[in-house]
Amino acid sequence: MRRMVFAAVVAVAVVFPAVVVTTPGSSHGDRAAGYTAPTTAAPAPVHRREHGDGVVDVPPYRIGEVIPAAREWDGPAGTVRETGVAEVALTFDDGPHPDWTPKVLASLRRHGVRATFCVVGVQARAYPELLRSIVADGHTLCNHSWRHSYDLGSRSESAIRADLERTNEAIRAAVPHARIGYFRQPGGAWTDRVVRVARELGMVPIHWSVDPGDWNAGHGAARIARDVVAHTGPGGIVLLHDGGGDRGATHLALESILPELTARFRLIALPPPEEERRGHFGGMYPTTSRTGRDAAPHGDRDGT
Ligand SMILES: [Zn+2]
Image 1 (cartoon, rainbow, N blue to C red):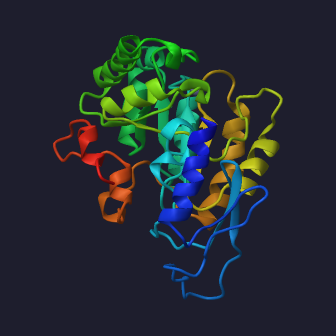
Image 2: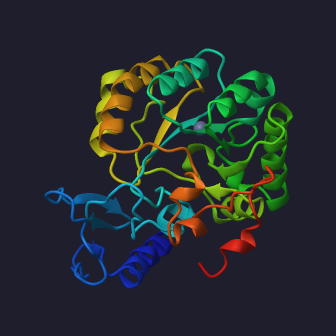
């Protein structure tokens, strides 16, 4: 894992020399080459974010602009931890939940925001009408395993595959033509194996870049909102929950988070609409099928 993170930092520095990468004890990178700063108004302050063992300075980005540092290897074990463009994605895990999912959906609707829901198989089976509401509102679906198994990644390849397929089948039983382009490992306990199987099934493994710990009962709404607002930068993927317990604090926090973030970013469901795709961004996510079937085979990604 550590080697992979180091490799990612080096790769970013090599492939995208515009990004300044600072690793402990060393300083290298060349901001000037290849990057043309946005010309609108005064330049916004550089956004500094953690990146593996080091820190990456990201210049200000405009909506729709590709963020060079964000590539598929950006997260642990080759997962995606950023959207790849300036737009920000909110993700809601552990639902659907009969109490909280409708409330979260109502908040998102009121603020005109689309998001991504990482659903648990048994929850999907129990509350198919909530899945239909999620899809009807234009949100994206993500597989979050059958029973929210933290140890899923340590099982055999065939067991992982069976778990993920069973979950997708439960989702499709509710929404037959659902496109399930993403997988998120419960607890972020990624292994190379679970990442590989998810990709083989046409799902991009998504991690996150912002985690306010809203799953923690000790974190109130104000703290959750403050954390999200303070730590979300361009391309951020924000981890939140609409299930798995009392999500009252998360729901309340959304009333601050949504206006604050929509004032600074465009919030998107993953993947963004076809017309928003740029350059390598199209290679980052499974190709959208116009027939409503699942994502294109992983082979499309070769060479990107
Ligand atoms: Zn979860």
